Every structure is written in structure tokens, then in C-alpha cells.
Length: 395
Image (cartoon, rainbow, N blue to C red; front, top):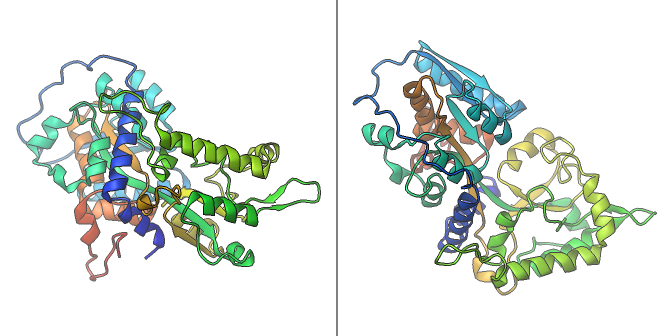
């Protein structure tokens, strides 16, 4: 079993859950600017259709290898429902999705890579309220992991379902660490900085050749939400007001990053970062050895296998502040979300597809194994194939 999964499971500790839920709440609130309740929703049939037929569209953001994984599960859905045709629109980012729904385009089921839109889409009605379907079909929401359940609803409205989850941790190049005499991955931010400075090498002109770790905010997955659990930084107070400007965890994190960048050389770091390739390309800095350590999600395991199979790497929980070692092993948990667009021409068929993608055990396991994302329903952790081989990420 890949070590990245241990990060995921440890992220379900109480300390991590508190940090994650607070972050998710802030993200949801940040997307509430459009206003409106989306209008009343048309009542649905008292029972789910006994036979599914028709055409339904699925919009998602995955591309290339990952899009093939999605298509494989869609094929299974069509095989189980021979009179259904799923028209797949892959490579659709959140901005394209927003515009398509607003324009009334043919969007039935939509999958987003961000929980940021949940507050906006639930409140505005861009994603339909799923309460009627969930109650009628007796979908057990207790099978969702608590954190996942929290970030797929807003202000009492569940307009989204989780399409797997992401957990973050530290990836490190074992060969580069061994060459520098480092035997274990860092556990504190101070250790991360010290190891990174030791791992950083320079070209003859003084520019960075290999970077131990890039502390630059905005570099790949170096986002505030992903880093907050390292210092226990809080987003909101009990009244829902922002703590970003006053919580000591944020100050500690920002001061650490600033001092770290200055030791490397801010101008050199800017130039190095500007020359980085797209993080999802085969020229990813970590995959080609341009950085020795990196903060990344569990999906990198699949990318490494596909794009950089010869790299000897390991994973570990992301380091914490020296005064927050009790948080070590936790981290940020988020994920993809799916919903039924307000303009869906066949909402019953859209719900059937969304339900299949999110709570059907076999479908969730196949998606999780193919994408190397984290399953979000408890039954997926104990799933087995017909030959008895455990297939979930927990194996």
C-alpha cells in the first residue's frame, strides 16, 4: 500500500478534521456572492424509475489518462442501463462550467474540482437541491466521511455529492535526500527548511539548479488552505468572522515562508518558479528532479507511476510548526464534487448517474483505484473483487 494513503487515513484524526472543516466552511462562504435561493424546485416522482432511458450529459474537468478512467465507469453505467446514452464533456474547468450553466447549455451532471463553488451553487440554485432524491431513494448519508459530508452542503442545503476526495502530504525524492545525507523526511517546518537548504544546488551563474523545497505561496499546491493545518491556523471565529488577519497560526506560517524564501534568495526563487512547467505535465518539477521535496495530493502517486516510474520517492505527513507537533499526521482534506445543473433536461436520469458515481460501491472503488483518489464512502474501504482481491485504497 502506498504511504500516501496513510496520510489520508491519519487526516481523519480529530485535529485534522477541525482544521479541514474550518477551511471548508471559509471556502464555502467565500463563494456566496451571487445571492438568491434558486427558486422553488419541481417536485419529483414518488418512486425512482424502474427503467432508465434517454440521453444525459456529464461535464467534468479530467483529461487524458484520468478522463479514460471516468469513461470506463461511464461505460459500466451504460452497460447496466442499455437504453441510456451518456454524452461526456471532458476537460471542462470550473469557469467553463459556470458559463455553460448560466447560459442554459446542455449540462445535466457536472463535476467540479473545487469545494469553493459549493456555497455559491447551493445558494443560487446552479446545482439543484438533492434532498428530494436522497429522501426518496433512502440514500444513507452516514456512509460519507464526516468532513466530506460537511463540504458538500451549504447552509442546510445539499446540492452536491462527493466524487472522491484529495488528501495532501509531503513527497520526497529518496535518492536526493540520501545524497545529501538526510535519512528521514522532516517532521517540522524548521526541519523542512534546514533540509531544503541543504538539498538546494546552484548553477555556475548563481541560479537555482535543484530546489530542496519551494515555499512560494501559489506554487503548485502551496495554497493557504493546504498549509493551514501545519500551524493550526483558523479561518473563522465562533461568530463566523474571519481570523485570517489575527490568528497566530497564520502569522507563524507567513513569517516562516518569508524567512525561508529570503534565505534561498527571493529573486532567484521567483525566476525558478516562473520557469516551472505545468504541475500536471510530464515535466512536473518533482517528477524530473527539479525539486527534491514537494507538497502534493494523493493523485501524484498515479502520475508518478505513469510519468516517472523510475523515480525513487516516498511520502509522509506534511511537517508542522515546532510548537504544533501534536498536529503531525493530520492535514487538509478536500475533493471533487458533483451536482445536477439547474437546467438539466432529464433530472431523474441525471440523478441516477450522479448517484452511481458517488454512492455505488463498485463505481467508487473503480474510480478511486483508477485515479488514485480517496474513496468517500465507508463501504469502499472493504470492497473486494469477485476473485477476493481487496481493491480499495486501504489494501
